[in-house]
Image (cartoon, rainbow, N blue to C red; front, top):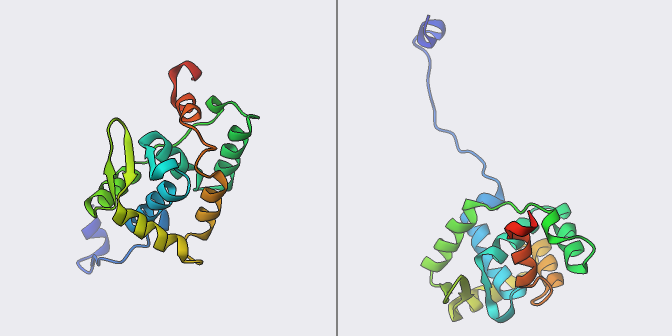
Length: 158
């Protein structure tokens, strides 16, 4: 017996809007990339690895606490598993397509002048990504070093 036999000929399929979590929406991710580069990256530039770590960190209080503890030196960087999200790569490509970021030599990504202006607008909106901004301002531009990031991803620490 097929599904159609079971339900009869009255089976109808309708397309319905489906809610997407905010952290999977491209514009949200693009704003996060701008904020990471503006608020928590020295010279408005970062490596892709560092972007992934900070993107992962802002998703939960536990992740934020882990980053805080690593920065304080009370937790070795190899004790956490950072989730690499393909949606961040998509957001980076969209942000680049909008002319807000550019690639630098090596693994670097940096804000363009247009990107700095857009990031400043996001920063100036008090009700927009407020928790993310607080965390990134707390981390600042120099606390989460490339050396710590490299240790998080290094094979010798796994």
